[in-house]
Image (cartoon, rainbow, N blue to C red):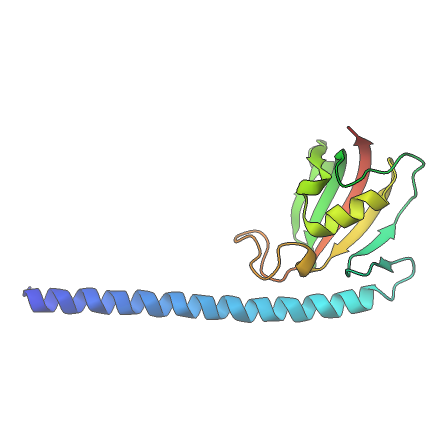
Length: 161
């Protein structure tokens, strides 16, 4: 193979790779737009359901059972059980199933949960629906959480540590 042929082949491969990456980015942008639309439609319908409360920021929650315990603040570290789902039902994490609680500082959580957890009393189970703007936004997390995904959390506040 001549030098010129080798250079042409390298250039062709680079062009093909760049086109593939561009196509993947455009596909991701389309998915992000669709996720936003589906999420907004879901949240609009969900807000009309009995018992669902929507805060000024757009966080939605449902008090499944109000506990009697104290409430955390944004500086608290809490022990929680949680199930995290996408709107399509895909489970992203489930401490109930693993029978292992999570201990987390409230101020290190996504914005929606930083707002939501201080509403809860120890012992309370709540459902939260977190708009993408209060979660991972238009970038998502890569593999697990797609761009502009609305997340559904089932959380029980076990204790404030």
